Length: 214
Image (cartoon, rainbow, N blue to C red; front, side):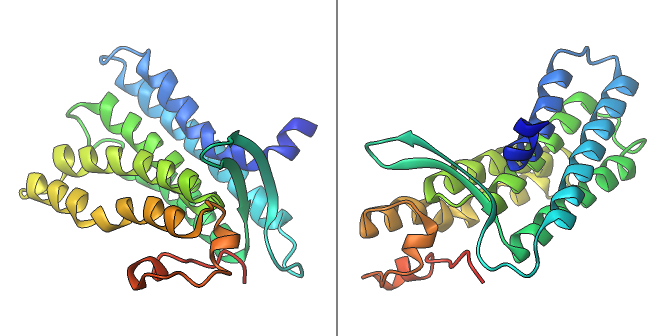
C-alpha cells in the first residue's frame, strides 16, 4: 500500500494503459468482455483521481504528490510528476469523462470495437500524463501518446469529414510538438518550474513558458 501511496500519480496514469494492454490480447469477437474491461479500468482510474482530489491539501501552494526519478543525464530528462489545484481538476475531469464516454459508446460502436476502446484507454493515459508532467520532455512524450489515439478515434469513428478532421487535428498542433525541444534548447533545462522563472529570448518560446505553480 505504501508503494501505491508514493506512486499514486504513476498508478493513475498507467492504469488505463494496463487495460489497453489487456484488451490487446482479447479476441475481436469478445466485444462484451472488451467493453466491461474498458469500463472497469476507467472506473478504477476515476476512483484514483477522486482519491487524489480529496487528498490534495488546498491550503498548500506548489506541487503535491510529486514523483522524481532521473531518466537521462544527457540530455537532462527526468521522470517528474506532480499536481496543483488546477491540474488536479483537469485530471479529475478526465477520469470522470472517460467512463461516461465508455457508457455513451456502449452500443453505438459496432465497427472495430476492440480498437476503439483500446485507443480510448490509451488516450486517457496520455491526457492524465500531460496534466501531471513537470518535465517538458515528459510532457512532450505524453502529448504524443495522446495525439496518436485521438487521430485514429477521429479518423475512423468521426463524422463524414473524419479524415480531414484527423489531419487538421494532427497538423494543427505542430507548434506544440516543436515547442518543447525549442524551449529546452533555449533554457538548457527541461524542468517546467525552472523554465517558468526564466526570461526566454525568443517570443515564440515565451508562449510555451507555462508556470505550473499557482
